[in-house]
Amino acid sequence: MSVGEQLRQAREARKLSMADVTAAIKIQPWVLQALEADRLQEQMSTIYAKGFLASYARFLHLAPEPLLGQIVWPGTQPAAQEAQAPPAAPQQPAEIPSVVTWTMPTIQLPKVQLPSIRLPKIQLPKVQLPRVQLPEVQIPWVALQRFGKVAAAAAVVIGVVLVNPLRWLPKIQQPARKPPQQTAAKPTAKKAAKAAPAAAQPPVKLASLAPVSPSAPRPVAPAPAPTAKVEPLELSIVATRATWIRVQADGKLLTQQRLERGAKERWVGKKSLEVVIAKPSQVEVLLNGQPITTAAIQHKGRFTITHQGINRLPEETR
Image (tube, rainbow, N blue to C red; front, side, top):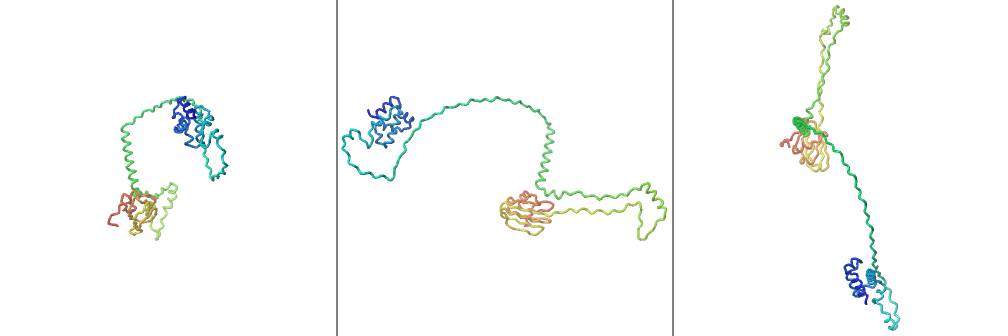
């Protein structure tokens, strides 16, 4: 019985198919068919054929050494043929190849299955928090209406102040200080007794002095009214993008240029400033350190600044 028939009978005895053997030892079905047909040594090298045969035989619980001895491998002859063959002529030593190729045989490690470990389930105790009920507070409808009206009025006032705060600055004036009034001191009893004998004497008349009545109060010179100090108008422009501007101060042209991105310019006027900005949304305008970019956008980049506020520049004053 050939080696291939022994392998096939052992596989059929165990009731295994080619697919079962391939899934178990990872050998292709065509290799198993070649082993059972005794043709594997003709299709691949001897090293691989011996390895596949040994693995297949161990899987089928057969001793691989007797099976390997029964197969006639290419390049070898049986012992009987070797005895009958005439002695071979001495051969010349073969040339040693410069490059020797060697292939590593495949090694199949056994599968190791680790035991599964199941951790015990830990159940935490359920904790129920006490429910807290807040008291219900009922607010009368009249109070809500009053509060809504006050809040709406406060919002309107804040909005008006924030839109244009510069209009309200010159209207706020400090209260004028009143000079202290000088009142005539009332004579006491002792001073009246001392002044009585002096009044009996005749008065001394001087030509250079005008008569002064003792009862009339002395005239008080009026205090000068405080003059409000007017600060100059300082305009600063920071360009976030490139744009064109023109600035006039007190009727004089200060600049007419193109501002590049990131440029910072500053001008000062005593009474008024006339500003024209091509793209007001691309600049940041400051007046005395306070931002007025919203007012510039509202007036479409054409506005005039005075101490009374900010107004739109007419079209004819170009």
